[in-house]
Image (tube, rainbow, N blue to C red; front, top):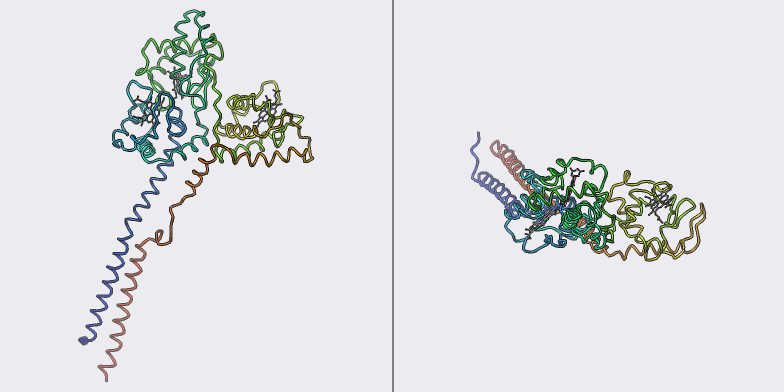
Length: 440
Ligand code: HEC
Ligand code: HEC
Ligand code: HEC
């Protein structure tokens, strides 16, 4: 073996040094960028969790805490700055265990609720860092917008009439309690909503007193039906059971459906429009102007006289004895609400007198005007701003220039590989150079 000359030695040392420098340089660069990368993937995970949490909120919490966490009546808001700074553990405990002696149920599986610890942590994230505009749109799009306030007032005249029934005082107590605690979920006159079954129903009346008492006292684990033993006395619970069993005697309208408009988003209107043309237009006409088969819906009198909730009920249950089908078994509540929101948009431009579509032809001019009016009308929907914000929110990817997306570990590898091959080539050159020198 040849002993390397000083000159080659120097080159070898330099090459080694260069390689080390490159590695350190690459590593440094990588470490410099690593925190940004970690922060970014954390933001992405948070984004996914917040997205889950909005759905959980829509399904479980909006009925009491409102469309956008604004609170309903006596139920406190969740879009409250004080909650954003509340200790994480305290907030987790409130949601997991509920608040004893209030309508706030326990939500963790451990405490008999429907949610896992992970889901509760997602909800804590929403309360502390969520976007309530986007949450509102989610609630509307999923059809969970609370249309019945959490509490209502019984109709005073019908309420007074109750006293004439046998044990009328008990029924009055129960109606008052129902209006204060149950109506949000079980609906006006106990006729049910999208989130809870009707209690004013022959099937429920047939259940045994024990069975009903157990449900109201302890709730049904894993559903929205919480136990009421903390909030109601045993006598009050008995009164509720009496009401449920004797509801057929209670005058209809005692707990009236309020005229709450169904909220809409850009997305829900688009869905409603699509569902209408697929399912309704063949009878009600493409612009709701009516045909020989079915009456006009796009007409002033109908729209001013019929509340959103009433339209929703007609569409859900159909009109028995006519060609108007039942849609409740074919469409979700959210889909039906989307159609109702779409139909409601016509109100601003609806004609006094409808001109029914006849097969074929383009129809009279007001129909064509109406088409454009309908489209521009959708732009003035009150919720549009929220919808656009959420659309932007959803479209808003992390602003990702290539150097943010680029994984710097690859750079480290490239630098490493380059410096190694550089050193090898350099050393190979040296040994080739040396051989002829020695032979000379
Ligand atoms: C049946 C109605 C109801 C439902 C459903 C409900 N809550 Fe509540 N919630 C309440 C009431 C009532 C209170 C106030 C309790 C009190 O007085 O301390 C409350 C309080 C809270 C608080 C504490 C607010 C504060 O300012 O201290 C949080 C947080 C909360 N709820 C979160 C949730 C979450 C998350 C969900 C859905 C998983 C949910 N709630 C579902 C009725 C409800
Ligand atoms: C947050 C929504 C919510 C509230 C508030 C609520 N319930 Fe319920 N309730 C439900 C749900 C959901 C079910 C269905 C549970 C199931 O699927 O097992 C239910 C079921 C019931 C049942 C059993 C019905 C049957 O067919 O067996 C009774 C009785 C009942 N609730 C009574 C009440 C009373 C009385 C109140 C008020 C004190 C009340 N609920 C408040 C959501 C609610
Ligand atoms: C097969 C034909 C048919 C289809 C399809 C149909 N309807 Fe109807 N609809 C009718 C008829 C007929 C009536 C009138 C019922 C009556 O006489 O009260 C009606 C009545 C209604 C009413 C009440 C109108 C009023 O003036 O009281 C509404 C609201 C309505 N339909 C909505 C819808 C929606 C929304 C769809 C699509 C999801 C739909 N209908 C699909 C035939 C139809």
